[in-house]
Every structure is written in C-alpha cells, then in structure tokens.
Length: 143
Image (cartoon, rainbow, N blue to C red; front, side, top):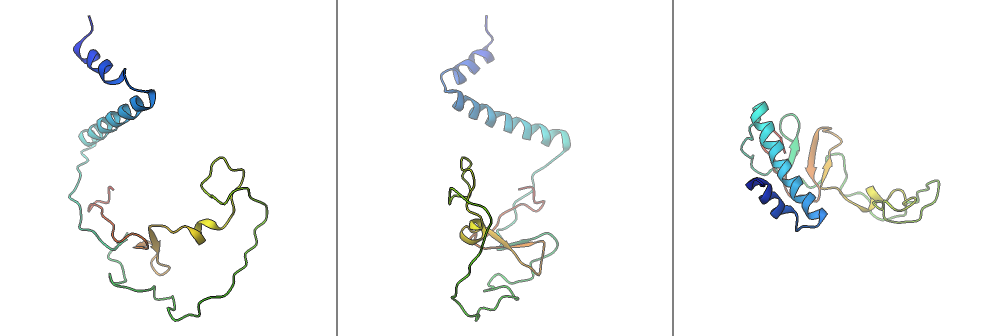
C-alpha cells in the first residue's frame, strides 16, 4: 500500500512533461533550501530599503538624484564624426549572445547594448541608473 505522500507526489508529477516536472521540483527544492539556510544559519531577511537612484558600497553616492552628466563628461562637447575600429578575425553573426555561432562580431556589446546601471569613473564602487530608474534592495544587500 502506498502512503498518502507518495500518492500525492505521483498525482502532482506523473501527468506533466519532464520539463514541467523539473521546474516544479526546482521551485520546491529552492524554497526548502532557503528555509533550511534560514533555520540553520540564523539568516533573517531584513526589511526592504526605499528605492534609490544609485547604489554605493560605502556611504552615499556623490552625485545628487537629478544629475545630468558625470563631472568628467562635457555635455557641450562636439557631436558627430566618424569612428573606425579594426578587429582581427572574422565573424558569422551580429548577435553577440548567439551560442551556436562560430564567432560573433566584436565590439557590439558596449557600443550597441546598454546595461541597466553604469559606474562612475570617480567612484569605483558606486553604480548609477543608466536605463534603470531605481534600484531596490534590503539594508543588508542580500538581494
């Protein structure tokens, strides 16, 4: 005779595809590991801090929330022109995230794709929102 727990597991996972079953199992294991770590190591989640425009490792960011440009950048600089860069080698894809490609075109990530946050050259451990409007984390910076 099967126990009630085994019967419930079979009902829950047997009618699913293998991918759906793995995703459900991963979610259940993730919650169990988190609960175990919290109980074993005394890890307690702290309250979330209010959203901020930047994040600094030590202290507060140097620039105010309404900054327009970094201090070392000249907003009145001449715009336009032509930049030619040369890279050795060849490529068969313009998608730098393509795993199947033999080689992707170099130089696209910093020139075409932007990150959510940008570092200031004056503050090595501070990041300001580039595309992101704000960052949310807890006081302990666990997430």
